Image 1 (cartoon, rainbow, N blue to C red):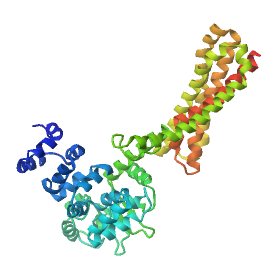
Image 2 (image 1 turned 60 degrees about the horizontal axis):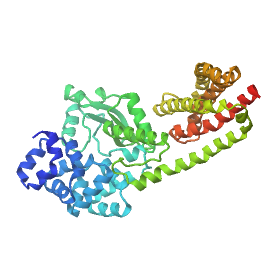
Image 3 (image 1 turned 90 degrees about the horizontal axis):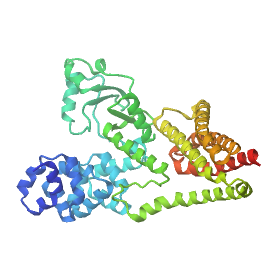
Image 4 (image 1 turned 135 degrees about the vertical axis):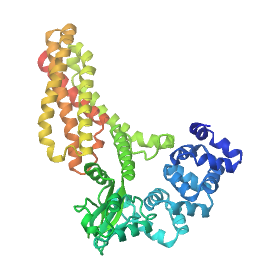
Length: 447
């Protein structure tokens, strides 16, 4: 039986109640594959899987790959003793992330089941701001002193190997806990036992403050190509580490949120399969109503030029073409700027330089598109209509592109998420001003 067959047929395999054989089969599967099959299990099957078929350590590993919604379902299926054992085996950062997502009454019950030491650590993590480096970090890590010999340091690493989440990197700290340097495990293994740690340690440690945003942590890890990022408090005392797997989760989460915002959807916070219809309705209806109101102004703008439309009916034919082109150009410009700001490729201070470049590019785009519709305008309405349409196309594309470029910078300047400059919003605003530009030009040229 292949891994895919086992995953797809896990409920049937549990129903056979051949526990020894099933343990052997599960032992050959990756934790992530077992997690993928878990949502298809009944509450009784989940209880059997996590409480009896998997070892406590393996169960916690599988559990950590589940979504918050799925984790809640697993916890609901377990007895209190099994819940405490499962939470207790999680890394502190994973346990804190779970408790942070659960309702307060569930969090309090789970905390009471844990040892006092674990409660204190988790409560300390949960005091840091949401989406901060302190909330994301794991407070378990291995440190050595600069005056130790390599032999002493290796003995300490062996004793503490089950404490650190990542033993590939060891941190050199002072007696007060300030970070002085880093050591790779291979450096310790290759050095002579009598060598002092300060002779082989690497200084100039890159770190991040506990209160800084997790997106900044992702940027620092990506920029400096780090595997582990130490997190320090205001006094420089090391409080935890952020590992690459944590950052991958953050990047995925933030990217998903940006896509949802750019589509004029509120942050859902769940997978699409798990989100209820009512939740999706609530997340989408707000922006749609706002955009309806904005588009009312488009109708009002058209009504202002009723006389021009009656005089030259051919103008109506080109209206959707010109307006849609402006909206598309604005959406392109906005998308480029939002992504550049998100990756740190550009900063708010760069707006003027990019404004000039976007003006040049949008003018070239508008001229090209204007030339493309000029001939059609002449064919359908005559030379004057062709000229009006071509000029309007240039002005509308430039206007929409500049608006799409400036809005993300303005939002970023005021501490708002640039992703809120969504394509539907850009398009709707561009429609209103595009209509005014189009009919104003047509009135000046034709009437």
